[in-house]
Length: 389
Image 1 (tube, helix red, strand yellow):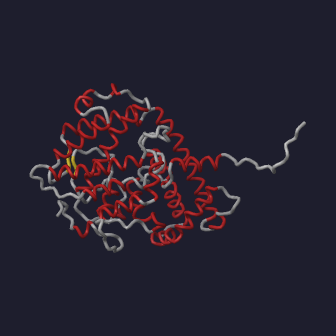
Image 2 (cartoon, one colour; image 1 turned 120 degrees about the vertical axis):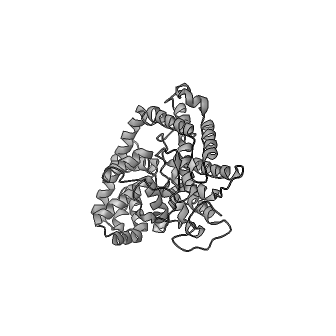
Image 3 (cartoon, one colour; image 1 turned 90 degrees about the vertical axis):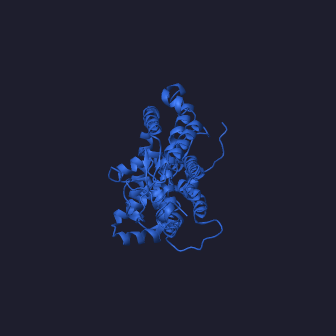
């Protein structure tokens, strides 16, 4: 039984038929996501602070784990309320949380905004939509993970940037391939819970990391927030989760008016003192330059050589060329089919390939590739006996 008004059959449907096993369909999706390469790479992708030296500063992988556990906790809390009629699936919420940022770029939102700028401005590149593309199409050499509809819907509709007070599911089975903006709402209550869990996860954690980075002092946090919510990540998460559980009804997932006002104030504070901090903005310049340089390099490389895999893999080529050639070799069948289905030009296809490749990079890999194409290899001299004068 579920509160969702879409049939269980539709929510659990996969693109390719698959016999389910003892794990259940949504727990199976969790394991598929965890074992995927894009998930592993999240540990080296920026959340807010670029390439931190401190091992305890939040990276993208920690963020998705926070979101997943918060979402599952909210589901448990709603089900445990006195006289509760909530029928929610924690495994579904957890799966959406794990997968919601698999399509995020290196260097966090700086990388995302730069790819959008390169591709034409506005929201030309949207990480929510790209996360769906990753799980549905790109993983496993173009085969995807074959996740359930409900998980994929929650991933593509997770937009955590808008700060609504309440959300209602859009109880429709949507064609997810046609979604091209952030205005679409999830088809399930679990998906709505993940949208709010995304906010809960980063508001407090970013403050905690900013204090360690000496961006802010704890005393700077607005008095109302200190008094009513707290100043530590744990206090903030606890307050917001309990408020969401207390104020959600069977019709919508909702914060109280007072809590929503405090969250909005906290968001404004974070933007002013953390996300727009001069040191963050300075790092963003470098990160955007890296993304632009890599994009231009790979675009030229593809335009010159297309599918000549042997050329990319020549011994004398840069490692970066070889990495890209190996990627093309593994994805050749998928991309050629996508070109035919979408009636793309070779230029359109090249743009998509390069975008996919860069968006999958970790911060470290992007920096290493930038270094390789920017700094010449040292000239190798034959070994010789040392002179002794």
